[in-house]
Length: 264
Ligand SMILES: O=C(O)[C@H](O)[C@@H](O)[C@H](O)[C@H](O)COP(=O)(O)O
Image (cartoon, rainbow, N blue to C red; front, side, top):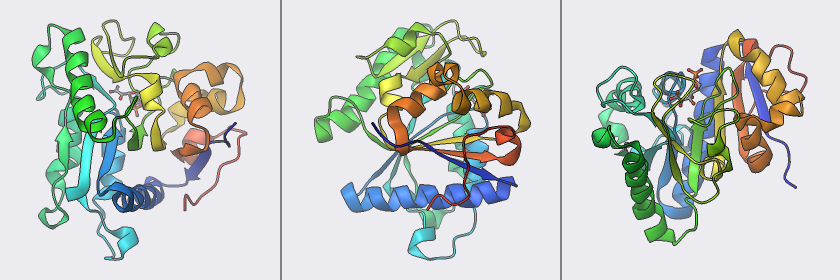
């Protein structure tokens, strides 16, 4: 039995971004001290923009406020099966919101996009990305399942995360690391996603959720038994205290589960 996840709520997006920055840099420093690399998985949706607000702020120069992007390896928690330059591409979003704006002196991360050259064969796309993860994780650490240093996720209004949707058979997968879906309820229909065990296998997992449109689903996820069965609720139940939720006050309105301010 692990402890409960942490729920942080802020009055403004800039407060949220400041605290998310501290959380990410703390995870970064611990990872670099541990194995000289920081392996992060990111999702799409509104997350890349909020993450960019957090990471592109000016540094105070202190170690606990310094990003070492040259030690970062960025992976994708999910991707929409569209070309890289398509407006729905998560890679494009992360690139335009964040990667292209990192100041040169902070170094360049290594980026591992989900290769979309097999657009007609989504099973092949998922296999290829699993091979990328095998090369980056298993060969180095001989692991049964990749362990990211940090996984950053969003929460859909139905409680989905990555491209793992409520009631999907994909939620029962225990073996494969990377899965595909061809009938996603959120467009576009074809998507690639980390499996639930991999999405829960981060040393730290951070959800970023903002706006009043999420308050009902957050209430379900945190305060009800049924909510624990939703994909986001399953991440909470499987990863326990390794999970931190960064929300604004609009998103947690009506949530009984106690929220706090500081992640560190
Ligand atoms: O590519 C995607 O669609 C996602 O990775 C998805 O899981 C997203 O994170 C949630 O739908 C939340 O999206 P919002 O933050 O935009 O609501």
